[in-house]
Length: 534
Image 1 (cartoon, one colour):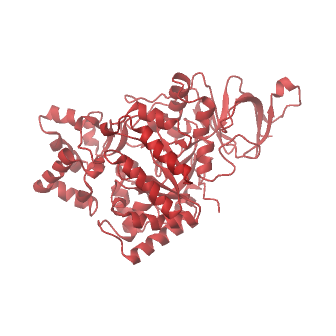
Image 2 (cartoon, one colour; image 1 turned 90 degrees about the vertical axis):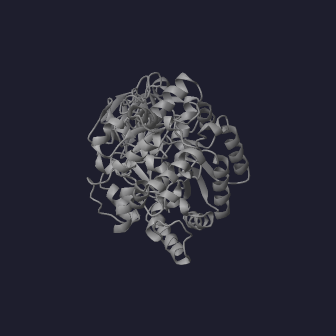
Image 3 (cartoon, helix red, strand yellow; image 1 turned 180 degrees about the vertical axis):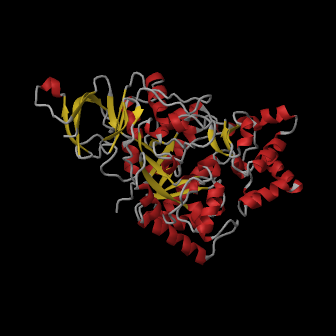
């Protein structure tokens, strides 16, 4: 054997009781599990390396169902932000915007559109255009494994452009073809960002047709739906009905109930989902264990102001009359970009900027910066959008703790960081989501049992991804595993110091190889693209 982990408390991902065992690894897979080996007096497995794990728990590697590491995995070979949390697989291509499939025009446009999420990519060799080529690029060696969703917004950008109109039949056929090719090449499903342009311009009929293609390949639809604010419940209901009509599995991205209008309404969402599940719908969801959201400042604008793409947005912002109309929608009506709720500038904290000359804005709310400048908040926000060329990221402090706790208890819940790694002060979820679950919500608060929480983070997402040999500690399964101390595991990241690594996770293995050993990142790049199983 390559490795034996001795006398470890196995939390196998099933949700069942833990047990003491020796676990042997060979050839990248779990080769043997000998329960209570020491007490039984049986012959214990031997290996070239033996790790005494007394006092530690062993679980399957955590699966981040909502990650924005599309370029970070290529830019940062160590990717310690995720590896140190015990993440062994991330799902990329989220919120309808990513870097495949593209042509040269679309690539330039999408790079510009999501600079705030991933940087401008000037340090990346974009030597791919198709989904398959992007997955091949990941296969050259990455820090953790990665699966991919075909991004519907990018597909629409490719086939239709940035216009707010229905697709022609020829354009719809082209979109069907692009989604089918992405699924053929290994994508596990399709994502949408229905408060982001240009994906938000797609009517339900168009989305249904694309979901039918996804369903034909056994994939799932992962929408960032049309509202998390004033129309949240209706938006969830829309996605449930749409996927039911398409016969497609549904995974609700960062399924939160935010803004003041939704305080205490998590049970209403779960009741809606329970009714759909009882009716035969295939639904899962993910959440992060924090209250604030994170996105780009430009995402707050009304959709009409974003039609035509980034240059058109900047032109509208620079026109005084149009800029005043944008302000009116933001502050008085409630733009669809801000989920139908009038924006509260004291909840919008700048977390990152693209222009180094604007770093003084980071860590302050728009309201505070405006107060310091002696001007109205929209004047400050407009200036920042223009000067930073739409590249600013924000934290939006609009969540409710009771909603977070209620939703994470649900039986179809999984974990997702929604972690944006850009900016001087990123959301702490990028570095802390999984230990936050284990430390705060299991050990300190008892919201979930340890066994149940591990199931939420391992076997449930593996089942959604239809991975038959991941997500459980079982003989024959891939040896993607985490060793942690249930007594001390905790997120180190905070809002003040978001890039702090967790504690209590000394070892992480991917494909049976140590990527975190004794709490330190090794130089192992054991991750690969995880493609849809045929």
